[in-house]
Length: 258
Image (tube, rainbow, N blue to C red; front, side, top):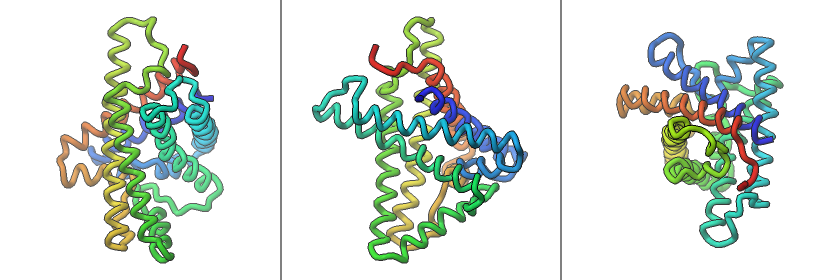
């Protein structure tokens, strides 16, 4: 079950990183976002098949991650450290749940996702939230969840929290170090993108203006426009690294601590 989910996730983020670089090189205009990728794929028969593969694989992965959280197959334990790790596992499913949501909306033609990466659907949803009672607090809360997930991604990469799941001990040190490098770069990139997304959710909530909302594509744009083109390329390349790591994790996934 987790194998298919990891590979599906790897395909998504590898493609997003490539699209981000193509956008930077002016070869295409935007679209470096999970939902935009689905819209692009939906134009082709093979693309629709890929979306179904991604959808089913991601659902399997979400189920497995909740199983890991509840059943604790890696024996993290019930002390504070163990609970923190298990909560981190649960938080890591946030992005996967959004992928499932986008895939379903695109497949059934009920979404307003844009192929150029414009976050019209997201801004519309947040605008509706802000019109409701306690909507401002809800939007800010979503931003905080994004922030928390970003922190988890950083820590996961730095502490090699994935190592129990990747059965690569039998391989050469060069191969193992390559996997660890891909993971470190990939989780850092995901943390940066999620952190930027969370910041703008909080800003949208505080100002009660849904136009501040960004998605992955616009988070990349923020990096390029306000931080620097070099950093844009680095984060895009690291996103490709994340995709490659997730595919490798799927291939070498170890479903328990043995």
